[in-house]
Image 1 (cartoon, helix red, strand yellow):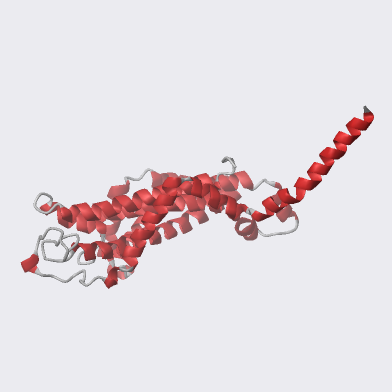
Image 2: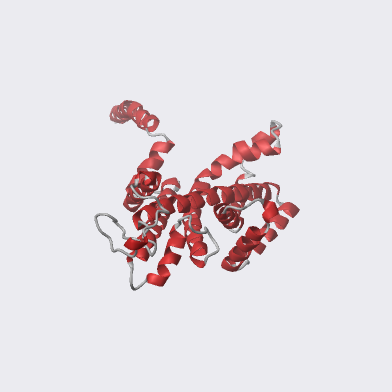
Length: 315
């Protein structure tokens, strides 16, 4: 009896010893970034979205290869439907819509990425300071954040864009820079709240207390110990903000307060197409389709990243 028990225990120990190296190899062969990538690949819509967004970005980057210039006019060839010569047709001034859509993508994507980076910079700093120090600092910064959240976004966007354009002393003569600044000013609140919540959750953890005990300063603890643990949430929020910024820029340009002609953007292309919606529907179909594809792709990528970074997702 004891012999059989001892034999079973030895057999179990032998099996554990046999499988332990392979288990260790599997763990070593699959670091965190590999697990995140595998989880992301399981989200098929996100994978398709990466391909679609890659095509949109590639088309914008390769826009100078077009045989037409974005401002090249040919009034005798105005409002021509899509053809082999003009894939997306021509507008009311005979300009190639395909070329203008590609160049418009460069402006819209630049505005989306730049405004997102600026808003993340502001939001992360505010969230770090509020969450780490707490108390009066936290209350003051969060009341300011709440105040910005209560503002009527579209009205304030139009107001700030108009004021900045009328104040030459600021040096913001480019409508693109104005739009980037305006969108960033009114979109930093969401990353600020997310980062603040994570700092409140993490600042009492053991690794933070250990850093305090060895004499690490506040800036080092915030930037080297707590902030890296919030990167995944910041990345996900950033993807959502890019889509928001592109749509906001399109809306402002459509209303005439964003990127100003003759610089093409998807928004002002739609504004130009409004007068010819029935006569030349292709003027609004293709820029609108690019906005739709880009925003949906970015949203699905953000959804896939959220699932990939989720520590509780299935193995």
